[in-house]
Length: 265
Image (cartoon, rainbow, N blue to C red; front, side):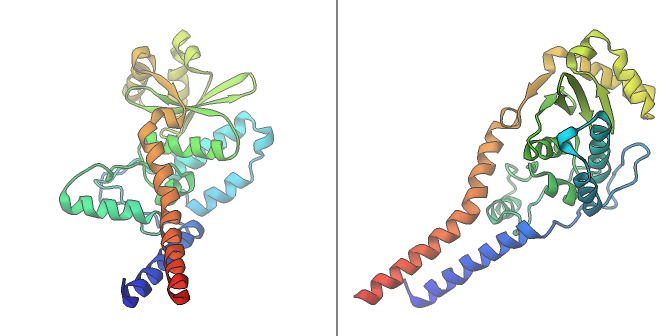
């Protein structure tokens, strides 16, 4: 290996590590196509990611109440527009491995990673867009990182979150900014709960009828953790999030070892 190549690799690896630190410290830029068909939730102003983070920190999660859950749901609902791009591209500073894979796929017209949903709740609200599953993954990650138990409810046409607070259960639907007092079994026993929750949030009858049908389709409903909901993606993220640090550090160590052994000779 020539000295030029060694120096190039060394600077490249340090540059990648700096990019990793930058992505860890600084937020993503909000990014969606302004001219696309985007709608925001009923009666909710679009919230800035920074203000959302500040307001979330004010909530006492050790003594969480129903009002706190409604506030959390509102903050996430207001921070993420209901929109999904043709390609959900990652930044180099977010994960350089995914960045490279996606750019290769853009040129080869493959579509294995271009629709990836993010797991990190902060990155999701910083980006500012997502469909029901993406915003539900954001709340799930927020609860998980704060040692609070929640589950993903995949309803075969919609995705929401179930939260257990002591002996009480709640369903959080951040995509519609609705909180239901009860769990799926409560809804199966009395579907009027859906009508009351979504009509009070201002949604029209046709939307509520569609949601009722989704909630009541027992055969399509699945309750899962994130790793059960996205088993392969969970493993993929674990691998690339570890590798984005491990690979450049390993190359730097090997280059330094090679230099030391060469000097000894």
